[in-house]
Image: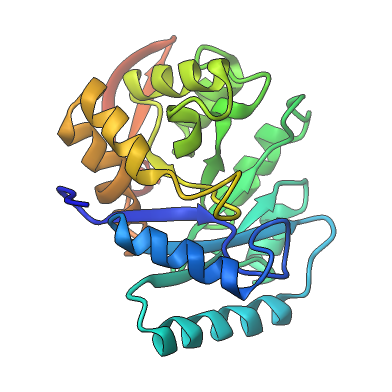
Length: 263
């Protein structure tokens, strides 16, 4: 497949035996091969992590090292980075400070997720604690949350304080339902989406869909926007540089600024 850029996928569950992702090493290899064949150069292995009930970090590191070795042995040219998808809780900020949580690659970016059905009362405070810990939060798949509204106080506050929003590729092509698809495109249109990732779990019902989603975004929003979401912004994150976010003032999207330089 010919792509105008190499896709950088910062949300996936391709490591086997750690969560509800890849069932075994063959599934891992299937995902890796398909991803490389379809233009994905890099994937972050963001296994689920409950910040209130931590998994064994050593298990993750051991599995990650096995994955790197297996890719090399099989001659699959996929670069993988460490990571975790953190179920955010009141103690997430302090756990980042203590080094108990795994960031994306060797960066200060942390992928966090919220409950799907109801916004927790601690959400603002927990995100702010992450920022005060010197970390850069990326909110996973907000288009899938039942309460997401770009005009709501919480999402305006998050966007205005430098929180990045990661959209799932499957949502863009309608695999997560009509509402998620509509909301994903609305967030892209408003400049309230910063990167697209696969959130792939296996090679069947939750596969790698970055190539299809890229084509859909390119067709509707143009090549430059597609490159920004699939290649440039996630690439910027991996080198631990700032991604521009939108400053919100009284509900009006006024200008772009680099929150982390300002901070």
